[in-house]
Image (cartoon, rainbow, N blue to C red; front, side):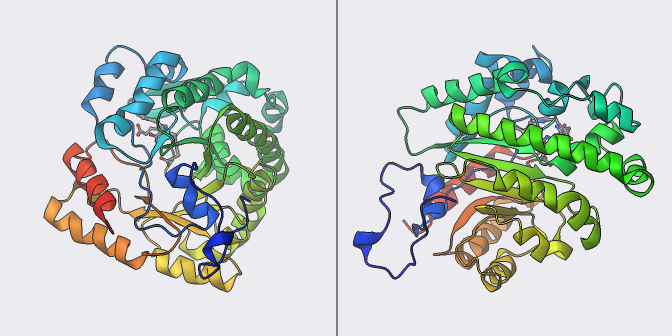
Length: 364
Ligand code: CP3
């Protein structure tokens, strides 16, 4: 955890000095803000003309591994729209590739050439030293910190996939509908699945700590498929591994957020992970989550979210009241403005600009 959070009513002389702290980090230090920090999941990507122009020349994986291009693409949304944070441009499937799995990205999304079949496949995977096979990610973070040196307001975000979410792709081979292969492992060979999750946990801990060392000021753990199981399944296969990641990160200087999707049935189990911030999808009102967090002894938990990413496609006059409602409901609370899941390629750039402007004008 960061510096202990001070109660809002304490004498101002004892509140932490957050003067040189990036705006995104302030809610984690207990500072009450006039308006929330704003950034978006998938804020870099195909909805931007500038991104598509670069993707015409290089493949997605080449882009992730090219220092100059990945730096440029990471900065594109920040330069165009003025978000309060830059998220490094990369993908959650880079660590599985570094563990030994051949990865491709096509029109249908990510594909592993040889999805895991058997416990012997798990035994062959290595726990990589992040400085070796994923050194390009740390180089990117260092480069982005240099680019942002003249702008201490703006935070640099690093990230990783959570062990469970990574395992879904490694076993299914790509995006899935019914998760028959993954659930086959869960029912028929749970020990093999646990062995995989254990290796992934070690990989992700080392990877995120290396990102923090390289300059990530906030890190986010993406558990996109964390809501797939019932609560008993979540508590067996998902939560312990995500919690072990959180418990082993160097969070004294860089707060860590946990993102989970479709998890309204898992609220208490998710909160037990005790991240510094929880990123909530659009199906759960932040007010409901905040009440549960307070009841569990976390009244100052930073909540991130949670506009429906598809609402970003609405007419500006319809979108504006949705944005305002979220702002009003979370006023004075530790809140980071974001979408509930990543932007889709059809997101109109004008709406992105509107939302950033509306959030920044709030409370001014
Ligand atoms: O701007 C940012 O948010 C940073 C970059 C980022 C990407 N992927 C770039 C990307 C981040 C944080 C991710 C995380 C990620 N990747 C997740 C977790 C968050 C989520 O969206 O649920 C997942 C599940 C993945 C795996 C992945 N990568 C999928 C399923 C796909 C295909 C879907 C799609 O949108 O095409 C990708 C590809 C991908 N990752 C793209 C981008 C910009 C599109 C690639 C392209 O240019 O063709």
